[in-house]
Image (cartoon, rainbow, N blue to C red):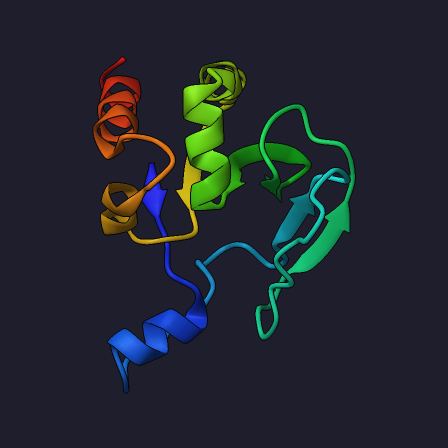
Length: 135
């Protein structure tokens, strides 16, 4: 589980820090697949990638290298994460991701925001996340 901050939030919290733009050696073109069900896809602006929309077996984004799916990312807002944890949908999504070579769940918020929930006891969410990372 990766808690991620938007570029705007990163600029505010770490002014002057630049994001690396170099690509790994030996990869002439990087293809990023975006699932067709992703309603508001990340645009990958200023990134040297080719973006293709198509159905994915699991996750919202994937990386193709030499025609092989090598990594997948499930993108969640904090609200969606809480809903998925309390409704047990996250366990099924993680089972699908586990069948792939490399996978991650990216939550677009700070981990501290989990403890500021008002509709669900924060401990319920934190305990469920800890359990998912152990199994």
